[in-house]
Image (cartoon, rainbow, N blue to C red; front, side):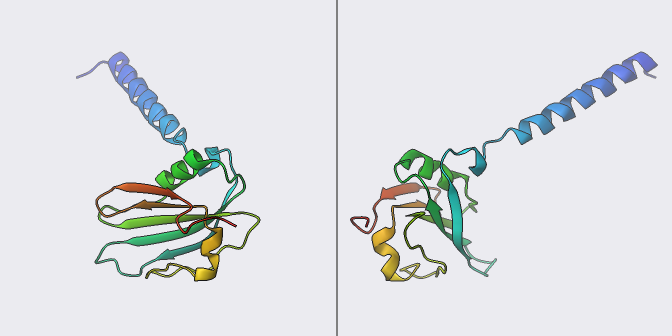
Length: 138
C-alpha cells in the first residue's frame, strides 16, 4: 500500500497536469485573436454525412490589405478530412452574398467583382489562397 504522503503527491501531480491541460487548451489561437474585423455573413454545409463534407463561407473583412491574416482565418475554419472548405472574403463596405450554393458558382455572380480572396482546403488537405480570384476588385 502507498503511504498517505505518496498519495497526496500523486494527487497533486494529477491536479497540476489537469490544470496545465486546461490552461493550454484555453490559450489556443482563434479567430478573435486576429487583428482585423471578420464577420461571417453566409455559410453552406451539405446535408450529406455519408460523403465528403462541403463547407463554404462568405466573410466580410474590415482591413482589405491583411492577406496573411485572411489565410490564417481560413486555416482556423472547420475542416473534415477528405472534405472541402472554401472561404470567400469580401470588403465590409461592399455587397457580399447572403446565400451560398454547393455548385459553382457558389454565389450569385453579381458579387464576383467584390471578392477579395478565396481560401480553399481540398480533400487532400492542400491549401490554396488566391487574391482577387475573379479579377479586379471594385
